[in-house]
Image (cartoon, rainbow, N blue to C red; front, side, top):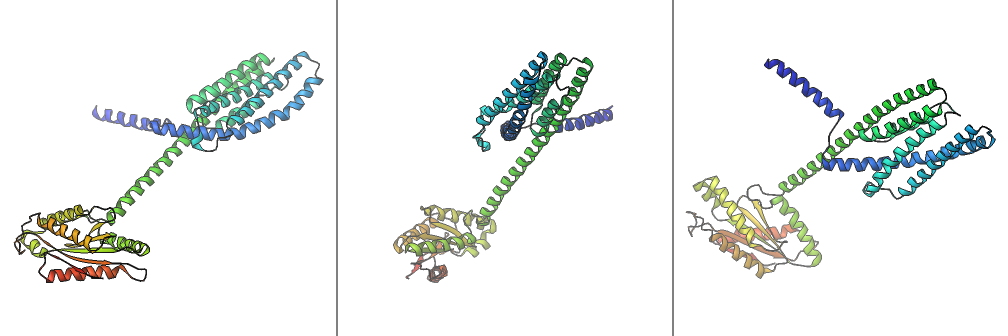
Length: 408
């Protein structure tokens, strides 16, 4: 019993999947975008079709007028009056369509009025050509005009299921009714009606297949665009991560290398001063050996956060240079301003009160090396980095927990 139920559910799921492929669904946002795309595409194609219809109708007006003038049969005269009138109406409506959509150039320009024009003109053109097929039966007993109209609409335009049924169903009803009343030979009329019905059903099937293929193409394109967007976002995140220190969330040395070059060139161009502070946590190796790497990591995180809170300007930058070393870039900051920031940073780290048994103060401290320079295009940022590194070296040799600067 259980196995039979599982088999039944499996069959139902397979049928459901096939049914979903035949009747795919879209989200509300996708529906709006898809329908706007179809309307825009249909209108552009209808612009070509309507021009072709106008030329054909105009081409047949002259021979129809000649037949009308030369005919002596009242029935034939009435038939040609109907034919000419229908052709003139088709020409007039087609010209009106061309005028109404003359400014349609982009997808964004598609409006609600275009939706009405799209549906109305397709319905009108197919129904009017069906009517033309019916009334021309006394003079030309075939349904080629109807067949061409239905085939063209189903093969070249994108119509939803409901639109197809309304358009082709209406066209067939009009054709069948007029042919039955206009064609004197009932057997021939019935043959035309049946042939028209077969063509109508074929048009419905063709239209549905084309519509579904276009819908699936739309969904695949949207999926590709979505995947590209997600990939782009991922690449941006990866790029950002490649310039960010994973532990402290500060910019890393790679970011610093690019940023210092950028600021050096800007300072050289604007003839501004550029200052640098190089920082080292005092006796950090002993701290790590005493408390372990986990506490060491927490210490680095605290120091990084504290240093980053000191700087205020968007152009200032605190970087984890490597290990327990940090660098602070201070554009447009003279020696006095840089010293003030160094004092703030030294004091803030001491106020963290992180116990350090190997520090002379008993708490964690930092040493700082200050350098400043007026960059030129002939110089390199390496001069400033080397000067800050030398100043840091002197601060450490002088007993640590202090800052030292080198004059230009």
